[in-house]
Length: 461
Image (cartoon, rainbow, N blue to C red; front, top):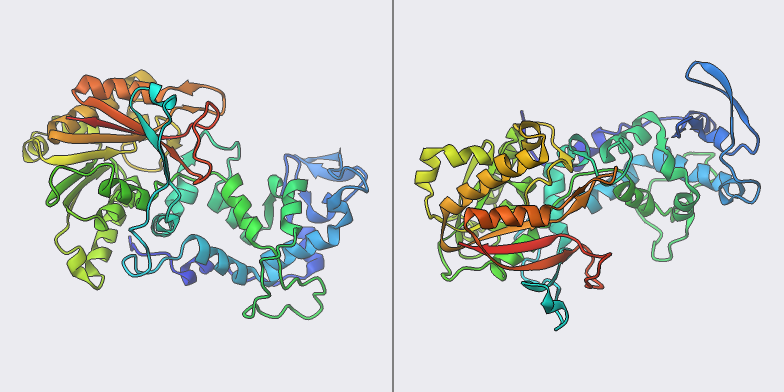
């Protein structure tokens, strides 16, 4: 398997150019309702005669009446999708690539020294034992582009996400459906979505590089609000989560620092799509990173990324940074005498954002949810075994830190991971120190019953 970064050319090759008239496009674009409709039929005010599952039916119209904004602006709606999907598809897809996947030399063009927003607890908040404040996950979010670029299919398509949205169509499949099969997910045709697409955006300047529209296309919009289509893809279609590498880097430099400044050792029982590796490469004083994961492709790509860093100019910044990867279940290392002997009391920091039981189902490797499908078994046979191995390999005075949150499934089943995992970390021998709330919005940084999100929980050996 050839491993490399997603270039603009490779990205656009997924979506070959097409030639189709506006009149044909209206008849071919399908809106993916339970009873699908063509874009042409979607504007009907009367029941539509159509075939569904092999029989003739009268499909109820989706228009609310003549005052439905979609009906009133139907020509603009058609023009919008025709321009986005057909006439200027590569132009807008390239813009999306540049905003979502593109990155430059991470040492020269990414900042790794700005602050993370920190909101300290009030006197009242301090009643919650160990609460140390709120941290933002959003600073220098561009560092996630490296992860998206290298793992775009794993993140956007191959990982099944079970607790976010009901759609079974992945982010990547949604793009493929729209651009290669002319299938639009129904949410994108909702009145609120259409309103976003057609909303004028004053900040959009007339582009100077946009290709001229084909002759006869009178609905061409020079200032088309293409941003919102891709924005809704990010909100509507399921995709795997990414830890911001810059946030991890900041924690290594500030929150999880050690008593000695040089020669620090980092261990992560999962690779988290290379976020830890990226953070490690930009952090001072850390000279050895050991990571574990069960997915062969992830291990190969993280190794590729390490070599990418070593081959960059200014190698003095990272030439002394060692990386060792193990492709196997972390809980099995608890019985690996060679591993336990080699790393006994070795690591200054063990850092993990563990799998959230069955929240994300990955596509390869000996996954813990496959090996231990029962939650209580998973807690003991996967989590406790992993933590015991971490305790053995962590030096006295070293730290164990986990990023975790409770979650509900779409069916309403609740998994109290924070308490359950914490109890077992303590059982393994680690001493509880403190925790931070982590927020994906930089403002406002507030803690309340409706706004709590992930925690960074810190223990000491």
